[in-house]
Length: 118
Image (cartoon, rainbow, N blue to C red; front, side, top):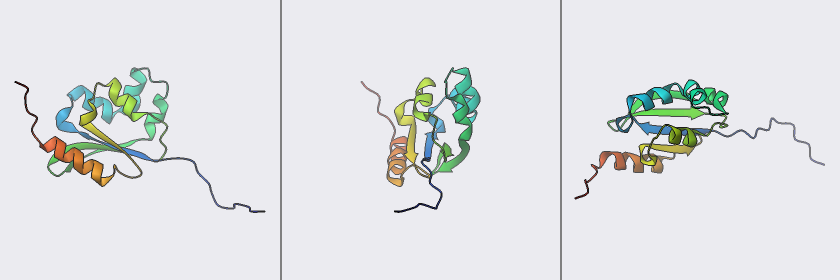
């Protein structure tokens, strides 16, 4: 018979980065105050938004908002959708940070000027 004597956790971590240049001032305020914004939007899991550590930084010349949590019980992608963010405006990853490949692809996408349709 095997007996486990160490701590076991089923929690997961998650993270995101948002390009500040692609969002409105209202969206920015909501992301920086996720718990209160989720509550105002009527999200039933609004209390779980309090576990997110949200900061601002610069990555490769792009001002971004980054968030991290060690207990992912809040659907940040649904929250971003409720705020009207486009999927190209952010990257969601697991563990401590979005995977470097995902972040690099987003950075290249954010640095490439969009062509206007004729």
